[in-house]
Amino acid sequence: MLNRKWWLILAFTVLPLSGQIQFGGTLNPAGLYRLTNAKEISLPFRMATFSASYTWREFEFVTLSALEYRWRTNFSRAELREAYLVWYPSFGEVSLGKQIFAWGMADANNPTDNLSAYDYYYLFDNGTERKIGSLSASVKWYLGNWQLEGVFIPFHEPDRLVYEEDFPIQPPMQPSASQIEKVNNPAEYGIRAQTSLGNSDLAISYFHGHDRLFSPTVYQIDTNYPQPVPVSFVYRKTDVYGFDMVNFVGDFTFRNETAYFLTRPGGRAVLTNYGGATFVGLSAEYLQYVSQLEYSGFKNFNVTAQLIGNHTFSVRSNLPAFEQYFAAGMGSPFAGFLDKALLVSLSSTLWDNRLELKPMLLANLNEKGYMAGFELDYSPVESINLEMSVNKFQGDKALGDDYVFNQLEDFSNFRLGLKYSF
Image (cartoon, rainbow, N blue to C red):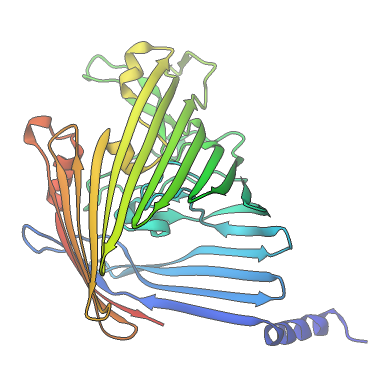
């Protein structure tokens, strides 16, 4: 009789032969440079990606990995972005492992999409490229025209932020690990229901979690400083109620997405003083939304326009003077930076789809400021793409150094890259 060791050897030999293995990836060396002087902007980028899956009967194991690289320091870091097991029973899907979730029906800017944290090094990338995977379990049920989804995340995963780099969007200070309070009861969960109605898809969702960005909660008040100095930080508890829909009318597609956020204090909420400093508890209600219009009636030419908005209904604190320091810790990053903005993008393909052109404009509708961009993607032969992009930021000096587009002006850049897909 075979012992346990031989049974394992036999299983790992026979199972791959009885299933299906698929894999693919990219090699994508690229450089990012300032428009003003053509000097390199030293930020990490994904030099290579690799995806693989193994399917056996109604089971599938999926992995996505990447190699992050930085030219200036020749530093590389291997990253396992996703690794999860999927079971496909008759009623839907069950998955378990490190996963990236994408909720919402709008393109790129999704206020209802809060299950996976953001990686700010890739903030200007698209889709799940900006996201961080987390250990989680999810279930999907398919009931006629309905799709029901439940997600459980046992551990809190914060945003990956940028500090002291050639990147303008970063916190004003970097707290030490001891200054950030541990999240109590870190488990998070979400539910989403989606259905079809005529030419429309509708969805409602609820997510209970903790902010992806930390917030000051304990301040040291010193008369020698013009403002209180934060000395302790916390990830607030936040509930998100979402609604999204998409409508198809001829060559037009309408997408609308709205998320209502209810956030409340975390950490030492029962204290009024801590170690000679002052605890500040902040609660708030705010709304983020995006309305998108697409038109595809032109030959090889598409137009997309998005109205992105953010509105704070109320902020409450045990110390009202501190309500001015509230900042959203969850939601779409661009909606958090801008109260109202318009994003217009065009895309066109030429030469049998070998050349793709993408101009775009993001404009602040409340203040002066914009980002103008242009992307070019040319494929001279199959599997090889030459990539080029330019992004120009313009602010308003009258609005001060804290205005986001003023901070971004020096980040105006162009990117050159070569991408090989296999």
